[in-house]
Image (cartoon, rainbow, N blue to C red; front, side, top):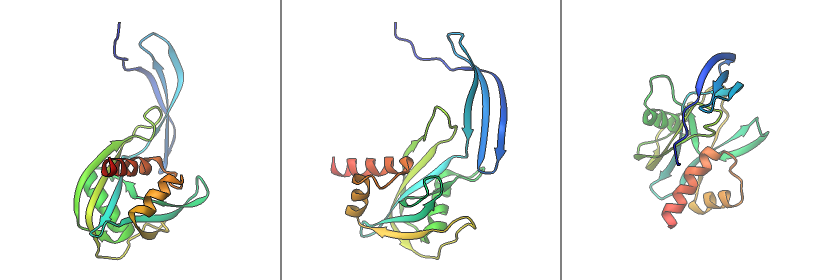
Length: 183
């Protein structure tokens, strides 16, 4: 007998933290088997975007910034939050322009992934943009201190090989890029 898992039933739900960058919810849930979990925690976030941005000559437009959670400076894809009511593609284009000053190019949705579907409620929409060009200056938020890095394909691949990219939601679309390119 091979049946699909069933959705859990939410018996109670309460917000325990509701701050601009942290929303945590405690649910009391019942599994299809009847087992009740009195405390199941979910972190709520807006959906996110990230961009593999490639120049006409195949170089990767990346950002470098301090990440307080791990206490280090990391090179990453351009990324950010989707604003309420904003189309994911529009958000990706906006974030790339704001963080790097690069615009234009041919865009396609690359993949949609979750950092942890067990305990978070959002998705990350990953895009690839071919042929972006530097057309403006950065427009950073007050909480952003970002350096733009334009790297060769080999440099990005080496970062992945050497386990330098710690953000899994950025490593996954890059690994897919290299797998399909070299596969």
